[in-house]
Length: 415
Image 1: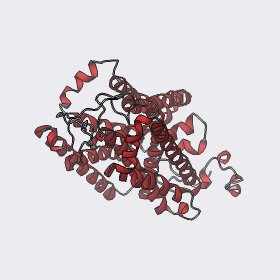
Image 2: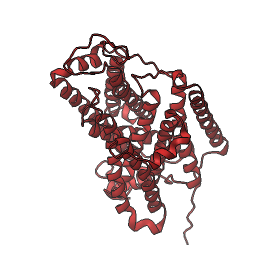
Image 3: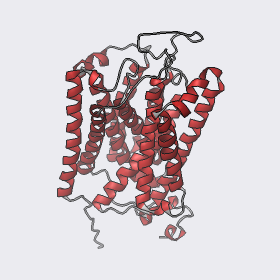
Image 4: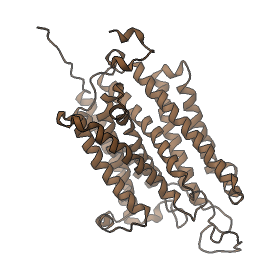
């Protein structure tokens, strides 16, 4: 009788506990920053009556939309039947739930009075997009937990695809709802467009996949599990498609804005005269977050190097932060139109109607709170991977399903 020997792929205990210690320290710093802002008030941040959503919201929205995008890998495997992606389904679900928890925790701690959260959960104004999103976020967590059960338990096998379809529809609604938070605000020129809903959906695909790739490569490297070039190449090509789609929608967004004469000043300010926001747009969003990663992904040599792949994913994430900085904070900083079509000579309410952009500069407590949310997400992921053992044994090229090998590796199709 042939004896089958299974190797236990696990990160060494010393290294694992060191990793948890670092993440716990990051979470602790975030908690101290939240206590500092809660005790002293929001005047210690860079936010004001004009810019009410600051750096913590950039981190929070980034994590929330990335949660939706991270679940995309599970959807490809279970809903669309791509066998090569199925082993990653459980890691995809775990990472999605962890990112959402981290993002929501930032929002709760930044708003102040977290003890009043129960009131917000039990009292709704259904004419508000914020009330809708509470249902979308809590529903997403429940669906992902059910999704993980169906993928991890044999009894859940028959329910994998139906739950996967439901999860796919729900996460698209979640990301569209997050984009609609800003798109429904008619008072701000840059926000006032339904285009932000589909734009946030495509952004979620790119940023979630970039985070998923980094987590996948890090965990496989730490535990010594084989990760083949073929699946990694597929994920990189998919990332390139999503990044290109974000770049395309960005061009369409600003072309749509500039088509109306009333938005000439807004577009000119964002692109050329906005100071830090123009810099974030061109260097962060376009160059660092779009063109540079695309150059790496589709370069015949650089795309095969692991370090350059890590760099491409990191650039996509940093570019995503820059894009949200421009969209969320830049749109608030631009002078508010109190009475469209009329000129207001003077205002003492710091609303920007005097023609001056609102001043905002992130402070250390805001950044630490955002990093604390990331630490929570990564801590949940690290513990989940270790305790639940959601990582596949191997993703080597030879272990991929034959029907998914295609023409890229014909020598493997017959093995």
